[in-house]
Length: 110
Image 1 (cartoon, one colour):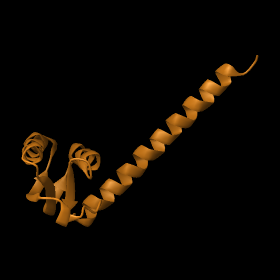
Image 2 (cartoon, rainbow, N blue to C red):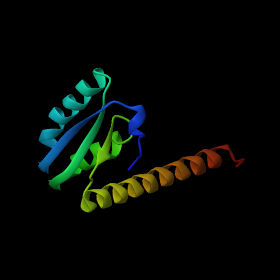
Image 3 (tube, rainbow, N blue to C red):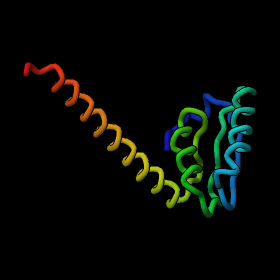
């Protein structure tokens, strides 16, 4: 999680409980956007989340630190974010390495 100095930001808590699934993301995104439009930093409190799907996990990974901060994040959510972030980074690095290798080979004299 990214630490945001709360003394410098006016924030609003957005508490989420139960399931956080793809069907809920439109509403959550709307609430976060409204907070932003009002000059508020959204603190998404996940303390009582018991289940989330892949779409929700990717939404949290993409938005944390950019659109909102995560607060009271359960360990299973944190583990999922770290695991998926690592997988995405590895995939990105492999594709970048492959791209560089392909470009290098295409420039080599034959």
